Image (cartoon, rainbow, N blue to C red; front, side):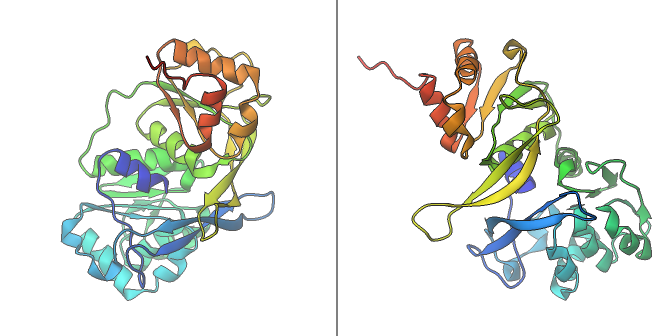
Length: 310
């Protein structure tokens, strides 16, 4: 979701396809997360809607390819049609960006031989066996560029992953040295915080996330809201989102803009006087405030949505 929406926000036309499925159908996603055991756990994520049909893809009309990770690459790597499409992108010298387990597909297509690459560490044996020049990721945010081949370790590296892919497409990112503050809370909507947070980081913005009564390094659990045929949305556990700054002692004047994600968090954050004072300060100083979905409950409580009609 992050690369898909970030690239669209940058003005790039993006299609998402899946073998055996058509435009308008969905792909189930997963929330992989470390829980203190020997490997990560996995829970149900967002239902991702495809906007193009795999069997109708004309590689010549695209400038680049993104291969997400997760469990999907395990079986997609055995699909000859998938390997054919990936190989055509490579043969045409087009940019290819693959992350986490996505490199299983690159290895199966024979595209990593003699190329520097990284991935989620357990994928290392496959890449080495395929002749790849393995680069050990120093952190889970590590990314590697070898010409127009971009590989990343995990979704934690999305900001650099997207920057490198945009560069491989021939694009440039300049003039984004802004400082942005995110107002977070427990059970804010996963994608409404993560997509915006990492997209702004990929632009070169300095982004901080704070939550009342929590400090830098602490986490906020998130929720995934989905419309699945019922009268209202469903709610599933999302990623644990790591805060980067402390709410107490915050100097709002040092930030250029404020972002308020939605979800359940705004319901109780709207009752916090310090939160209301923070929002009013941004508004009083004429700084951009971006609020999404239920986030507007905070704006309403702060009284900043009133319009004087004569």
